[in-house]
Image 1 (cartoon, helix red, strand yellow):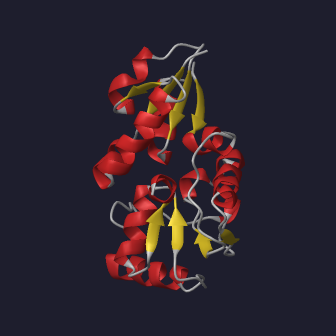
Image 2 (image 1 turned 135 degrees about the horizontal axis):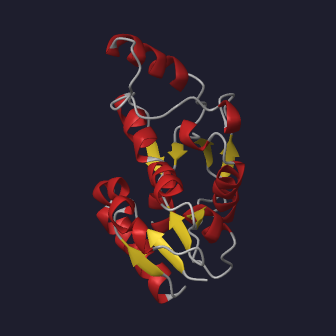
Length: 193
């Protein structure tokens, strides 16, 4: 079975250096194939392949366009990688923001938390976690509500945070945190720091 890593266009644009680091690690240390956009390269997957994704949008695209492939998150693979050079955050308390697009994917969410523990992070949960998550990108929202109302809901959502830093694993969530003035960090940036 071959692992094919889809690096996520949005994440690569957000953090090209971090994206390059993880691609290099997966290729050199894990022998994985690294490819680009899931919309372009999905047709190369066979049913013997496992697609590895960093982005919830890639997850949905590949579920639709390559149902023959086994699709895993990067988090699930890294969480079980005993040789990964984890940075040490020395018990820092960080809130986890789950993406609504993974609210039905507990293995993805659990792997995120296992990784945070590997990095010696004190994980802080909010009420709208796991299957209760209702958060993502305010900029691309298709909600019929006016943007002012959506912004109000975003600010109200962010009142749940009790830590200085909030980690997410979706670029849409990351962008919304920045819009709300929250000190948000993408999980892959923490991992490759």
